[in-house]
Image 1 (cartoon, rainbow, N blue to C red):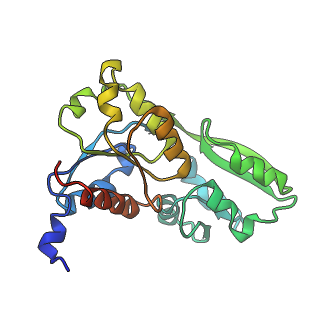
Image 2: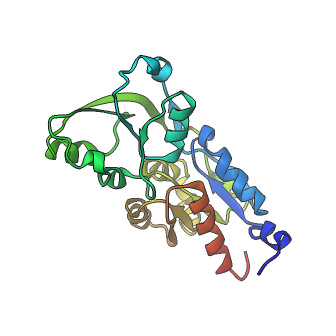
Length: 231
C-alpha cells in the first residue's frame, strides 16, 4: 500500500487543463495540486449572472427546490435554503428525473432556472408527466476571447471538461492549425453525452468520470496516469 508521500506525488509532473468557469475551478485545481499535479486554469465558459437569489427569503416556505449538482446545493444552503432535492450520484437531468418527487408531478407548477439555451430534456419529460413548466433564464454562458495555443505550448497532458458548451468553446478557442495537437490530448468528461460529443469532435482519447464531482474527475485522472509509462 503506498505511503502518504507516494500518494502526494501520484500526479507529479502531470499538467491538467481545468476548463471550468473561473469561480468554479478552485476545488478541482486544489485536489490536483494536492496530488502533485499542476492545474492550469483555462475557463472555456464565463458566467454572467444577476443577483436573482438575493430575495430567496421571500419564497413560500412550502416551495420545494431541486438542483442537479452538489455545488449548486451547497450554494443554496449557504444562502439559507434548507430543504433541497438533489441526486445522490450522477448529477444530470436524467438523474434528477429519477427522484421520487419528480415522478408524478401531475398539474404541479415547476419553474426551471437555467442559463440561456440549454437542454430541453428536463422540461419535456416533466411536461409529459403532467407538470406545467416554465423557464427563467438566470445567467448567460459566455465564451471567453482567449486563445488556447499559448497554454498548449506549456505541454498539457490531460484536459478536464464538465459541459458540452465548454467542450465546443474549447475548439472554438483553438486556432485551426492547432486543432490536431489539441485533439490528441486525452479529455476527462462527466457524462455519456459529453463522451459522445468528444468522440464526434475528433478527440482520440475520451475518459468518463464515474460522477460529475471534482473527486470523481480527480480519480479518473489518477486512473489514466497509472496507464502511462511516461509523460
